[in-house]
Length: 384
View: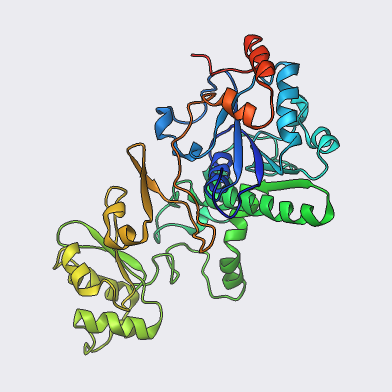
């Protein structure tokens, strides 16, 4: 039995990489009953790694169904018959060519939400072109805006396109449509595009730009490293801290803590580059740990810059349970948190096809039929 606010919601995930699995993980973390359909042959997508470390696939069973066989298509459709939503991340038209497109699925399950995840969207002149995160955030204005003054754009991992503009918007769209379907009795297609989603994440900055309050030159604005008070600084031990006292009262607190409150002229009255140099000199006089002792927990808007290895060990993250350990792997805990219907502890990722028999049985397939389909090669563990 699943646990969390989405307990009772059933979702069929067609296996892929990046934002699709991330979306499915988020929904599974919150209690949705997600079943992942993996193809029986290795597909070679993404960076190879042992299955136990592919934690985007956590907390849901993997079933292997050969979608090249008509019996496999029918088995997948029978899962879709029972689902509130479907998630797929193929190029436009792929599901239709397999016989699993929206028209086919809606004819069998009129309340189904058909969640589609792509980079460019389901239509438009680029819809059929290959691409990845950096391409999509290039088109939305995100990549141009990130980086230091006078330097090339800085790729922000794949957080803004794949995960922020992709997975989160797909999850929001799917859940919104599921809620609507419970009133209307009708499902619909959710067209989630990483270009659209990452553009949406930039809404505030587009407003600032239109008002003349945000420069199109990267690294020259208050929150893009253009201001001396919103940046990361190197400490005496080579580690970094971050400060962000954007409001004058918080900046005054930082200056007081640093012993710069009586300085004439004040840093606010100086040229930004000169003020930055003064802070570089100050922060370079002590270790990161020493600055934490002085500034952490104050209104100076301060935090140490932690590595992936350090973040789970920080006292605040420990107290909050921000990270959990599953199968010996430290990883982020489900988020957000719920007071009455908390999420369960995540479970380790399935090996592709590992739970075929048990998951298909739980979704209503008789054991005799599972055995027959397995002997025919329609169901089964992934081939080596």
